[in-house]
Amino acid sequence: MSAQRPKTVVRALMGLLAFGVVLAPALTTGAEGAKTQDPKFRKVSAPNVFYPLTGTRTVKDLRTYGKKRHGTDIRANCGATVWASHPGVAQVSVNSGRYVVRVVSGRDGLVSQYAFLSRSLVANGQLIQSGQPLGTLGSNPSSKACALYFTVSGRGKPVNPSTWLNAMVGNTPPVSGMFNTRPIQLASFNFLGASHTAGSSRYSTYPSRMVRAVNLFDSRGLDVIGTQEFQEVQYDYFTSKGYGDTYGAWYWDPAGKRRDTENAIIWRKSTMEFVSGSTFDIPYFGGNIRHVPVVLLRQKSSGRTAYFLNVHNPANTKGNAAGWRAKAIEIERDKIVELRKTGRPVFLTGDFNDRQNAFCPLTAGKLTISPNSIPSSTACLYPKQTSIDWIFAAGQTRFSYFLRDTSPQTAKISDHPIIIARAHLQN
Image (cartoon, rainbow, N blue to C red):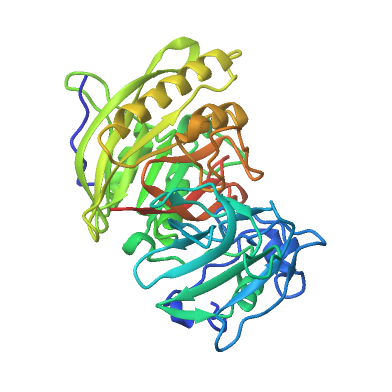
């Protein structure tokens, strides 16, 4: 088995200037009411900013921030779960019998602190996702009252945490330099094979759709894209248009055999570079074998490396393929486990033709997370906004942005959305 060599193929928010970032648009409906709705009651999904306590009538921000007191007390019941407001790395300490957890996004970046916890649910140095439980609330040893002491800072300068929560809960976390490097813009996209649209009255022919798809990739600044249904005629058109000057590609292309470009991984040459590539086998229609790509890429700006896998599991268009999909997911999970032994992060993109039946096995035991999920070792915490197209990550990486962009469907570029995430590689 062999594989081909890579082809030549805003708003500003008061008090946040210290973070040195530009905030991305809000991604959840909960953020739409940010100016009018109490932040503790907003509906939020990862990886966006969370309120540190579940909103109930007993939860009250006492707004105690001042010149000499750089945090606020948020009153709640003892034993309440405390949630991470944003992603980063945990720093855990103990003071007067109470745990203090700091979540640090990076050098001179966003830092939040959660004090007076009776129990910590995270370990020192652990990677944290937005909305992840950090611990349970205890009482202040001095006042005996149950209140979370919550602080926010950036570049070493304190920010009014009450103002920050009101501005940020439900929005993209301002952590563009998380883990002290630029993020990787990652996507999963089903091109909609040319054979599916020949003579179609609904979709344009593949050349028009390809040009608009690549324009979308460029407008989003995508670094790595896992592609499905990237049929040979579409790939040849892709290279004939000169897109290979911008993007490298990896797919099944053994010597003396017909290549299979349908499942490919492409990357922006200006930001990522090829290290090595291979393929592995999964069952497709009727159990027939499909060779799907694995590529090791290096981020040029940081020198950090990660594995990228891309798959397309069989749909039910030729009969019930649930059994073959389950087998494929088992193989995909095993491949992630194998690659994680190298110590590198692993990303899996694809059209899984499954929702919960794909998500739960792949995230079991906290092996992976999706951009919009929270890691759990005890239950399948299925996220709200889902499709059959997914991005998963394993290892020392976290997400700070997620978008299920349906514009390709609206524009008749494909019958699938494009799934976009911003991933950060820890050193």
